[in-house]
Image (cartoon, rainbow, N blue to C red; front, side, top):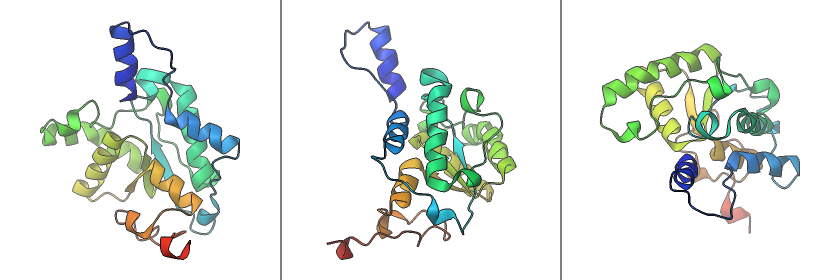
Length: 193
C-alpha cells in the first residue's frame, strides 16, 4: 500500500503536502524516544530465536536500507539483540517471499510456492524459531510455506510481537502463535480495570 501511494503520487504528478513514511520508521523513533515502551525481558529465559523478512515494497522498492535498519532495531528491541538472526542476504538484497505484489491472491498456488522455496531455504538456514513478517502478504506466504512443507519455524506479525513485548497482547490474539508464546505476558482485559 505504501509503495502504491508513492508510485501513484509520482506517476500522476499529484501535488501533495504530506510526506509518506513507513510505520517501521515511526516504531523505531517512538522506541528510541521512550514513547513505545517495548521490552525484551520476556525472552531472556526462553531464548527463542527470531529472523525478519524485509518486505520488497517497503525496503527494496521504496525506502531502502535505512528503513531496513529501523525494522531490525524494532525487532531487536522486542526479542533481544542476542535472539535475532539475520537472513543472508538481507536488507535491500533480501529475496522476495514469492507472495508479494498480488501474487498471493493470483490463484497460482504451485508457482507461488515454487518461487517461495528460495525464501523457505533462507529462513531454514537461520535456524530461527520464528520469522517476523511486517507485511501482510509476506506473513501469509511465509506461514503457508512453513505449513505446507512442515518447516520448523512459526510466522508472526511484527505488531503482534510489539504488543506481546508491551504486555498488551490479549489471549484471543494468540491463537496462531506457537505454544512457546501463547502464555507469555498474557494481558487479561477483565483484570486491567
